Image (cartoon, rainbow, N blue to C red; front, side, top):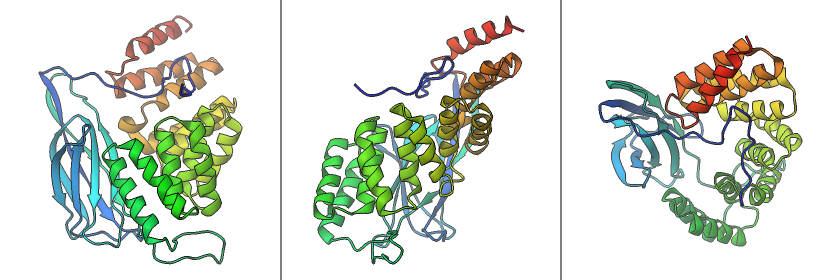
Length: 328
């Protein structure tokens, strides 16, 4: 059985949203910039929009400034797939949740998803002991590319096998090692995620994504001390990631370091906004409740309901608000 997320009185693992009523609908403009590792915008990259079943529902080509756009997209879960027109960069996949926010009639909103493509391996730099780019055997690279394609199509079992096959050819293959750990975190198989993530960090000490994933796995395995160390190491490399600050806040809350947790969660919400970091309200409410600051806890819970009015735990949050109001 998978380890469940840490549970607070006001929190839950993941948000799900009920389907909107037929008379209410939000249309999104989904746009962003595709760029290379050096932040140079990339022209002529094919960008595909796929729905939750991985059926293609849109296609765009980036302009000279690297921009792509999809118009009149309804709420739901989508995958944005960027496929470069040459062999210099790897394909990339991003998942995005578009939330139905309209109560009556129709409205429009926008969401920006920028994509940075990674360079394909060319040469190694072992002078500092930190691997940025590696000389990867062709057989290992082929298996890794096949793994990415299968994972993008949600063929997870075969994708994991392809990653392991790539590592059998080249055991110190950083990208394959990190990807294996990330897949296990996504599957919430946190125990299996630990070894490849630790190894990825040993190969590349600047692997911010590996530190973040290791922090998430450690937190969900009941080791907030290890999670804190990993997340603090992730922060210099992922300073603008709302997820780093969100999980750092959760970890500090678990360690009863409430002031620091409050700061991290507020920053997470500032970076992620209502659509990505609404759950930060729940953990902030927990902090204020522990301090006996009932008015502030109520404000956070009400903020959560404004951001996620159709969340499945809305009724419980309303009950919590009523109980807190009785203490004022």
